[in-house]
Amino acid sequence: MAMVGLAVFSAGAETEAERNLKAFPPAEPGMTRHVLMLPPAEQEDSLRVELQIGKTVKTDEANRYFFGGSLQAVNIEGWSFTRYVVADLGPMAGTLMAVDPDAPKVERFITLGGEPQLLRYNSRLPLVVYVPKGVEVRHRIWRADSEVKPVPEG
Image (cartoon, rainbow, N blue to C red):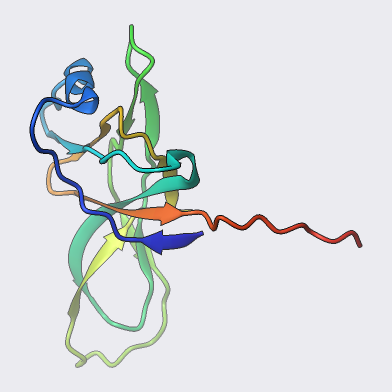
């Protein structure tokens, strides 16, 4: 899959996604709700949304870091909609490469560990993510190549 950039905006009359947002509850105390409204796109079935959930922290440049935690898909009772919840973020872990203790720290966006979270692209529904306060939610759009190639036997 190749990455493509995509502007996210809403203008004019209320969209179907904006109407459907009413089904999603407000954030509970200590949590924040993040809402992504995706614009209509051709061949939405060939697109995926990658969620990156994490925090910007100061670390060394050499090691790879990640947060413990998981993104859970939760069905909204009475609707066929899914909301995504990260109940807890942490602790932060990473590789243990030796670094110069005097080297300056750099700000980096550190995400949940594990495989990327690729979700279905659907412009008719908002993508709603609940995370603890202070946690950031970022996204990018992935597009499948239009050419499907055969795999040889062997």
